[in-house]
Length: 205
Image (cartoon, rainbow, N blue to C red; front, side, top):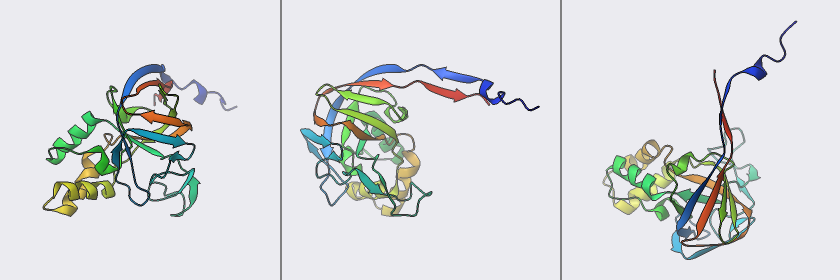
């Protein structure tokens, strides 16, 4: 008779949940017709994301990140906001041989300060803003060539295509996060953030 419960007993490493504190160092919003953002003092958030923002909406169309759907399939928009960290962008800029990469060049909505390895926050992490807003992290924002093209244009790259292609390579796991609005309201620049990181587990093969 087969052992029906053997797989349940596979060893797991449990990483306890924890709480972190951070700050909304800077806020950005994008016009409805372009993904690049500009600095603002506050973000008005509804269940569909930032009002009038390029990435707003309760749903979106699938693309290259979702090969399991035909391109253009309507799906839930879990990419309402893009979060980045200045220290991670500085590492990417150094790797690319650039003086800087500004958050607005790559469509960021929120620059988070005070969280080491921001891009490694797991999916399901909750970000509670002092003003009442709650964001839920969907996962890492995978770097793409479109953002690389924007960087190449802003720095006046001699080899535009080479710089655009270098960004996805050098920004892996440093591009920040995407999140969606769980509780709407207003986020203001400089606002305190309390982050609840969920319990995680690692399979021991």
